[in-house]
Structure formats: C-alpha cells, structure tokens
Image (cartoon, each protein chain N blue to C red):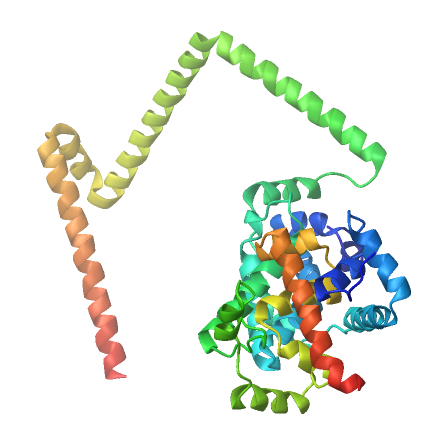
Length: 200
Length: 195
C-alpha cells in the first residue's frame, strides 16, 4: 500500500485510481493538492472566508464521493474546478450578491444593450468593497477583481492564478473557446481601467 | 502599419502573443507609438501582477472536515486483490516456491476433479452408502433420546404405533417442555419484581 510520501510524487491520474480502489490516503492527497487552489478560486468568487470554506468543502465532497464516475480522459483538476466554480456561481445566484461589471452584460451587442445592462455602482457594492478592505482581499488589485462579473472572475483566476490554458478553461467552465478569450480580454481591460486612478 | 492607436482588443492580442495574420502591423505600430507602447506596458504590468496573486489557504481542519463527509468505499475486486496480496511472500525465492506449490496443488485438484467426473457412478455409489450410514446413525441417536426421555416402554409403544401416535407423543413432549419454560420464566419474573 502506498505511503503519503509516495503519493505526493504520483500524477493525479494515479492518485485518483488509488482513490477509486478505496484508499483513504489517496483521497487525502487529492484534498492536500487542491485545497488551496479551490479555496482561492471560491474565496475570490464569494469574498467571504467562512462561506468559501463551506462551498469548497461541498465541492470536494461532491467530487470525492463520485470519484468512481471520473473519466481519465479529462484532467482531474479541471473536473474539480468545474464543480467548485458551479458551486460558487450557484451560491452567488442564490444570494444575489453578484457585483456586476460596470460595462454591462458581456452578451450585449449594441450600445443601448450595454447601457441597459450596465450596473450602477450603488451602496451595495460600495459597502461590499468597504468590508473587503478590512479583510484579506484588501489589496487594490483584489478589490478591482471583486468588481468583475463572476464569469470574468472565474476566467481570470483560472488563467492567471492557476495558470490554465484557454482551452482548459473553456473545458472547465463549459464555455466556447472564443467566449473564454473574450471574457479574459474584457476582464483585463476592466481591471486596467479600475486600476488607472491608482497609477495616476 | 496602423495610423490610429490600438484598441483594447488589439492590445490583448499582443499580450497573448498571438502570431496570426494582422498582428505584425500592430507590433510595428507599438514600436513607433509611445502612447500605445505605454498602454501595452501597463497591460503587461497588470498581467504580471495577476500572475503573482497568491493562493489562499483554508483553515487547518479543512481536510478533516472534507474527509468526515467522504464515503471511502473499497470495491470488492480491490478488496479481494488486497487480501490476496497479503498471502504473497515478500522474497523472490519464497514467491517462486509458493508459485510451484500452488501450481502442484491446482494440478492435483484438477486431476481429482477430472477423475471423479469420469467415474461419476462410483461417486454416486459412495454418496448413497454415506447417506445410508448417516440415516442409520440419526435413527439410533433419536431412539436413544426417546428412550432416555420416555423410557423403554415408551420407545416400544412409539415403534409399534402408527405415525399419528408418534406425532402425538412428540407434540405432547414439546408442549410439556414449553409449559415448563414459560413457568420458569414467570417464576424468575416474579422473583425479580419481588426484589
């Protein structure tokens, strides 16, 4: 039976295979490998540590309790991130705490649609940001990320913090490749605009 | 070469390192336009800052909390394989010896089974003889029990009587034993209540 030290050197696919054979150490190894990335993604999505822990836990439990359904042709991490992102998005939908892009819907095609779907920065967002300043996500860039739409935020996190390729993000989030590129480009553009006053 | 400043999406193309058709003029423009060059540099700085964002750690007990809700299930084939591995010797010579032993045992068992199948008539005869002996011994043991409980006259009456008489005698015996047990339990219960 492999020891924890041996497991640490194995690729994900092998650790998953051991988990499918009922090895508890393999389950623990998968949690150890991905607890920080998954928690970071969810934390930046929901912006509350306690909620992020609960949601990350839900994501892990869902994935690990259905490890027998894992298909090795996909990356384990993509599957896990997909579930974590879905859990976070569902939570945001339920709580209606989304901070909507100042640019309006990404699907808006005309100027009128952009204006109609644009979000007016009112007290809810300001109070959320005020609250953030006292917490971990307090740096300027983190605050700017907090103003992005959740879809943009997930793409930006997977691209830059987790270093995932565009194709992988598209597979993880079930989005067309072009949409992922658009989201990331718009998100970076919004971040530049949000951080511009600081530079000046 | 472009005679206007780059749009945000064009800056993103350059940031992503795209090499497609139409990118070369954008690069050429950036080389001569200080404003677009500055925009591209700012965009690069943002990318570097994003890449440097740290991961956050959950609480120390996070893994334990997850594992408390995970059902670790070992499939039967994995359990069987794991059990079988326990019997495999560690050293190579011992493994070879165990393998030879297992092969010899399997050979003997196969030969025995083949012989028994080929000589099914003998196996049937042996089985009948064994069954007959078992029946005789069971009858003798039952007679001993009845003789002990009812005495020799009772045994003789049972042997001479019909099946109905035998059933009546056995039923009466069971009823008497049952009543005895119930009586004892009632006595024990009354004694407990009195205490």
